[in-house]
Image (tube, rainbow, N blue to C red; front, side, top):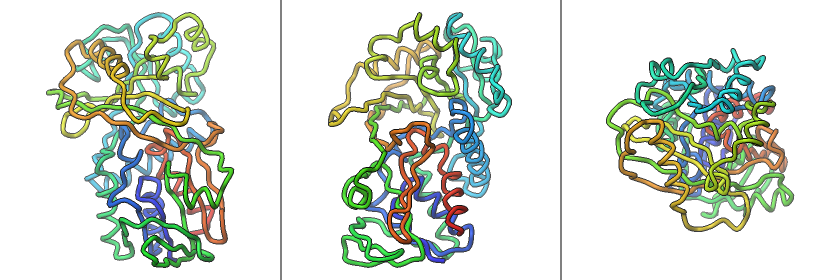
Length: 373
């Protein structure tokens, strides 16, 4: 079988990976010289802890398993089974963590409620003030800025993979066939459109009423911390945004403990991961209303800096990078991904929301299974 994958981000690359693993030939087409979207502008977190139960959790757990297997074969991914800690400061936040640990699926997630001393035993860099912490053993991390590069190197070694950058696909010309802006037609047995947040042009022509929206976020990255941050770190505001934490305790938190005004205005939470070079990737905000702002704002960065410094008990290293990014999210946020046959032999896979980096290996596996690759 010959598979044409449109899109060089992590969802497209994982579809290419699945096809090559199953013995097929793959041509992957990317409109930029390299992928530049949400697949690079994220934390690199394999984030099981906050996922909703049922299909979403099953997908995340399967993806976590696949990421680890792929990481063993592709060391450049920088796969690290580091887990995550969410420090909590008071009784209301502690109650939400307690409710999470009481979930029937808590063991599958690797949840434990730790004292502050136990949390510091796992992550000694957390020298600041907090009362306890929610530990999720199943969370992990990879290097988002370089993951696609290393995956493609491994794919090329198969002898059945071709990467064509700098080409925008403009037209579906027939079953399993597309034309790019160079005028070249690419024919296969199946085409997978994994175009991320690029929902205009061809995608809009194929699906005018696509039930997917775009979400903008801001993030930053520091100079090296100078010591190991041995886990990912979140704050209790993350409880408000992830479905795994819904409970009466969370209702009470929302009713009785407001977010800081800047965090509420920008729909913020802290997520933080250390990169292999020692720097910290820190975020994030959420913006849903179009048109998006074209500039980044300092107030969210100031807020996140304060939260991080309170957990670390030390000043944050100098900020090296600030950026904004846009990802695609199903308007029905309970859906893990939007997968739709849009023409004969042509499938669109988009809208994973903040789950894309985490769940892409399992999403691609499901596509391959459903299409009978």
